[in-house]
Image (cartoon, rainbow, N blue to C red; front, side):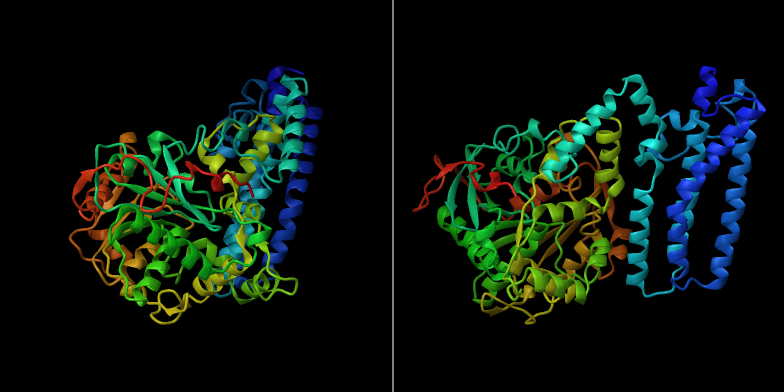
Length: 585
């Protein structure tokens, strides 16, 4: 057998060789189509209009026949042209980007057949007669199946992994098996070399101290980097479903360090990672015992009546709720509010809406909530992490299955993915309240609809100006959902749109000179987000500089930086990042 013919995926150009290749291709097609056939039948049973089904069927048969005939024609080509014929252009899908998918005729045919089946299934899902939410759920389920069924995910169908095994005399398979067994013990697919990082050593390294703690959180104060600081401090409330150090990964991309360098006396909430002792915690606890307490302590230490505040993701929802509770009590402690990729109006929230309905919420309440038969429980952090990973399965799941296990490549060290895998638990009662009153019933935006910490709340009663940021490609908080907050708050508002996604859009330091952001024309914030975008202007680089200028206008005059952390009865307890952030789920 010549090297060219071996690479082409069939043993020769003789009649026997052609028949052998055709038999292999038929077996591959049969194997690949078996699971797709079941999916086709299930979708067909979901009331697809007869005319749409007939058209899809006709087009599929035509395209499949063309694909088969082309493959057979290529198989009979002379050996010299076996790996480079005009009828086999490279496959434009990064899963099949390696040359082996094009050089190996059988693999090339298998990948093309897979893509045809996948496209047809997705078109069928689009034609299902159902309400919008049901159709979206069908699309999501189909996409999960399609991504999982890729031939690149299977050793028997992946020529790149097979060639790697041959070249290494099986060593790559041995390494892959070792990586698989290690991940089984960890309970998740590794996305990075977790041994390369340690919180406080090479992530979360900005210098500071814990100046307050209770059972819910530690409050960190960071050492000034300037001789003078603004009179009003800045309090950051990160999401409780992740560790705070996404805001302090490395010195060069730390939003915390950036704020400190801009002359802000900066405080950050570091959430406790709940364990079995915390299963009874409620949403009211997170508001009253954490967010409101953090506001109170920050004011006490700084000796100011008002402070600047920032909330990120769920942290923004918690912060806004806390400020609404205080407003109901006649208090306005915020000089300004910054909300980064935060949901306030939960009318439409993209892909996460697919998981929420009355039955799903009731199931959580019955198994984790305060009325659960066996008592309240914890939502495990790994369950949350897995759910978010499968929102982008090719990037965050199957990419690592192929690389780690089939090719035997240990994932490289990447701080962002280390943080992403540092999961946090959530108390069942708190989580169930959040699901029901935000995603399911959208109560938070309605004045007087909710009672939190004994107060009927109205977010419109918050008088502080609000800086609202959304990321244009965000799949967790779609930017139109972030924009809807402009219609809830009644004071002065500024909306800024950044490029990229939920994390990369937020963590975008100016020095990198990457991405861009959009600023509206004037102060107008129409109800329609697209109307705002039509008049907005794109600016190169980070949105951080715009926010810094806005924040400085609310931070007060400069004064000498404090010589030591804490004060007024709140002394330094331990160095940052503290103990709580190091607790593993």
